[in-house]
Length: 147
Image 1 (spheres, rainbow, N blue to C red):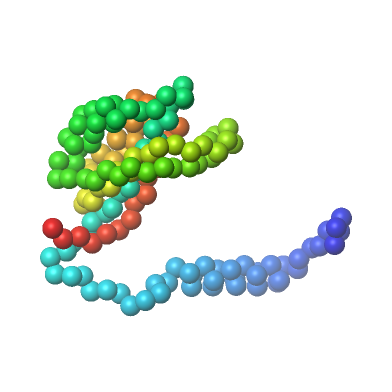
Image 2: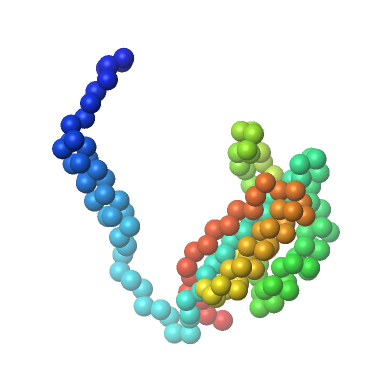
């Protein structure tokens, strides 16, 4: 087959696309029964933010700088609470290099309304500017929680 062009017939292309759509739709379906919410829980959003601590000049965001960021930026936006975890992250930079760096993971459970979500985005923007970061990874997922 090397050097040879194979042309698919339109009917065959449609059949393959239809099969892919069926598979994709099946993958979106739940795999188990829906869970009834436990009493005392509510629908919320879990936001995970991954803050790399390496700066472009090779230095690291210090523990004092991180604490100041949390005190000045995180705590005022999320006074009801949050969790910070230490981690080691790895990613491919825009220049293609693999970079491993110390990381802080910020977990926030909040309501689905616009204000806390905007606050999460503000944290990402402030951290990127303050510490010259390429990005701050954000993962959002639906959650149920009770306090």
